Every structure is written in C-alpha cells, then in structure tokens.
Image 1: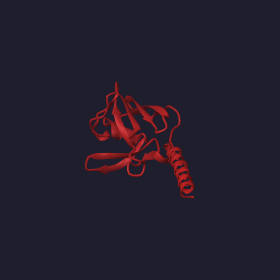
Image 2: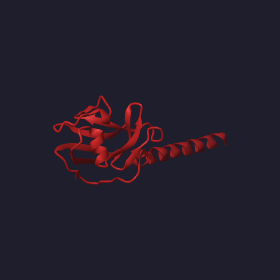
Image 3: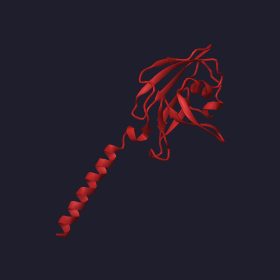
Image 4: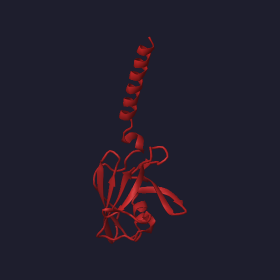
Length: 141
C-alpha cells in the first residue's frame, strides 16, 4: 500500500512539474500590450537611427527613429518606445514597446540595452546617438 501511494505521489509531482515548466512562457515574463507589431518609422527630425526590440518569445521589431534629440533615452521616450523611472543611476527602463518586464516577478528577466552587437556600458540616458549604430532592447535573463 505504501509503495502504491509513493508511486502515485511521485507521478502527481512529475505531472505538476511538467505543468509548471510548460506554463512558464513569455506571457509570464512580459506584461502589457505591444504598441507596435511590425517594423515602423517614428518621429521627425534631422537624426535617423535604427532601434530593435526583441521580446521574450523571440519576436523582433525594427524601428527607424527620426529625432532632433541627441541622447538615446530622450529620443526613445519622445517616440513612446520606452518608459521607466528615474533613479540614482539614470532612467531605469521598465517598459519597451508597451510591454513591461519586472526582474522581481519574471524569474530574473529584464530589458537589456545593446549598442551595436554589444551590451551597452552605460544607461540609455548616457548614450549620445550615433546614426551609424543600431540600438536594441532585448529581454534577457
């Protein structure tokens, strides 16, 4: 009897574990509605640069941003592509393309900023726009 009960409990635990693994998808990492679901041109201004958003499920959108701003964060806020909170280290970006990623509730995922192919060495409000560089925010763990 004990062996049968032990086997039954083990099977229940395996099924529950599989359910948890399957249910942890990008919907639990990101919250909110995407503003854009296709490549888009935004803004007006003398400076033009490319900005890529890569969501948790791998969806990737390229934006052509036109602006008169010189700081990346200012241009992206103006275009409505990012939102966040000002903190001791500058703008802490919490939402990109209308979707939020909260490190504390998403299993350690967050928006990471790329300057070209490399992770940026400064925050979004510390980068002077270079039109020949493509910038990106990607969901990262």
